[in-house]
Figure (cartoon, rainbow, N blue to C red):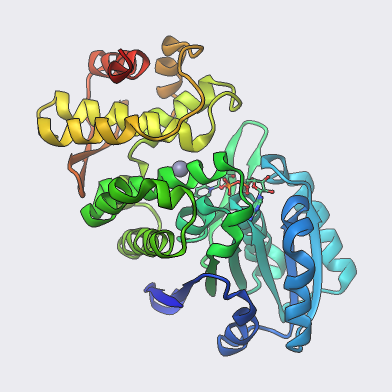
Length: 366
Ligand SMILES: NC(=O)c1ccc[n+]([C@@H]2O[C@H](COP(=O)([O-])OP(=O)(O)OC[C@H]3O[C@@H](n4cnc5c(N)ncnc54)[C@H](O)[C@@H]3O)[C@@H](O)[C@H]2O)c1
Ligand SMILES: [Zn+2]
């Protein structure tokens, strides 16, 4: 099992990464002084696959375990579900000496983390991410929260977990679309800050998508390391953490323009990364050879959804509402080479429109 540390002073925590190791979780929880009373928050889909063996293992190790299962999907990140969970916890007699384990994808991590952050002013929180996206992105960094009808993640907090436990085993029951979703964030971490990780993606994409132990564990490890280093430098997203938005400035708008249906988050981010790499090349930052290399790489990702049905004028206007817009200008995190990214505030509307028509025309298909 590999270990990483997120160093945030008194909020520091370890990340454990392994394959078929989740029977080790109870002893690790004890090692990190977890409370005896544990409440597992999960969703119906994950519960069906993993809840029973998971909670049995904790019970056998002497923990007093309760669980709460919510419907799967983004809808669970709502005030209504949040209130239901709090009510259930109170009925169970939960108190300040209980701990919360999130067993699930990013939705469960964000929701359970927000419950942990706010229930009686805070309970210790443990992340057991079961999607690739949650393993390499959402479970690290302490952003927790729920949605409001007026927008995503509008209610939330920075609340770091006490421990993150990542097992490749969970990934083998994930549908391919969910694997692609997480892979987008791995590729992103490579392009923004770790050339070696990008090379691994370039050479081993087939084996990564097939969740072969050695390459996937290595990619997840390096990916978590990048996210951890960036979070350490900028816990509350006052500056450098914004480079994690590479591919997301355009990606979020594409996702929204598709009505959050046709395009999944990861697919939208793949297209966003390509468009933003195009912009970086167009302003003379990303060298020609690097851009072509990225273009070749993105062309081999098995993206299902086409961009044909998406109205690029809508994407364009949605971007002016993106919360990454600063002082009237849209801020872009652009790779200046594979492995290094800088922030740019002065990208013209014209370039942005050209980048959108570039991805829509997908030159390598012609
Ligand atoms: N906090 C952060 O920093 C951060 C970062 C990125 C994304 N997010 C949030 O993460 C959420 C998306 O996360 P996600 O993509 O993991 O979605 P998700 O949690 O909805 O999981 C996707 C689907 O996979 C199912 N699933 C989970 N684990 C499984 C497994 N092992 N086998 C089979 N099915 C499984 C779930 O039931 C769900 O239906 C969004 O709400 C987003 O806002 C948060
Ligand atoms: Zn993302």
